[in-house]
Amino acid sequence: MNAEALSLVARARVHAALGDPARLAIVDALTLGDASPGEISVALGIPTNLVAHHVKVLQDAGLLARTRSEGDRRRTYLRLVPGMLSALTAPGLAGAERVVFVCTHNSARSQLAAALWRDRIGGTVTSAGTHPAPRVHPRAVRVAHDHGLALDPTGTHHVEDVVHDGDLIIAVCDNAHEDLTGDVRPRLHWSVPDPARVDTDAAFEAAYTDLADRIDRIAPVLTTGADHD
Image 1 (cartoon, helix red, strand yellow):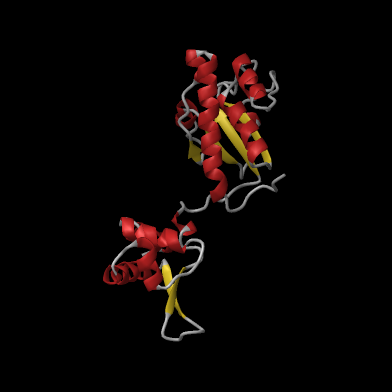
Image 2 (spheres, rainbow, N blue to C red):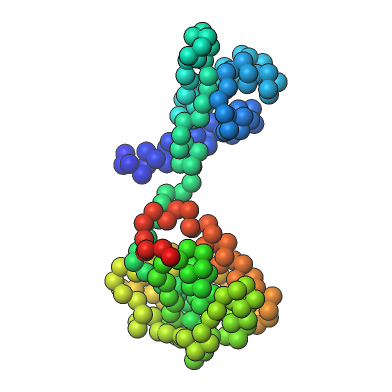
């Protein structure tokens, strides 16, 4: 079994251990400080025999560790194992020197995604289209401005003129994801509906919100990448 599979097994074991409300309450109680099993029993109103059972499950999953009191040597304290809860996140995403967002016309979704990435994560980022339009959609320019971002209304580009080896390519529309099957292949695909199909302010706002949520979600798992601003 490879290292990635072992990691999945370990994460699944932790998730299973946290699947009981009492065990989750114990972990919550230990998030800010250590406690003895007796103190946990009193604080949570759980019988001591059940506390012992739940603590064993949490220990077996690697979440908890015991330390003996330096005062009363008969007493033990429970503490969370550093890093175990954060390890529940998805595996890290290796970054790149540059991020390129791609959609069909490079007139809305890819433009907004690049502006959001630049603002929230930093580093070198750009956008392109498989069939670029002559200009950025006015509603995309407007929604970006409403959120404090700037788009160049004439700044559209063809993917073949933009993408370099080593770029992290993210397709933000289904057509681009399905069209790019050669050497230029997206590493990630975000299925964001085309706001131009509806062509309302609400549709462009929804696309902006979708992209912002995805970028906020990916930021914590970036393990390496461009020099951030």
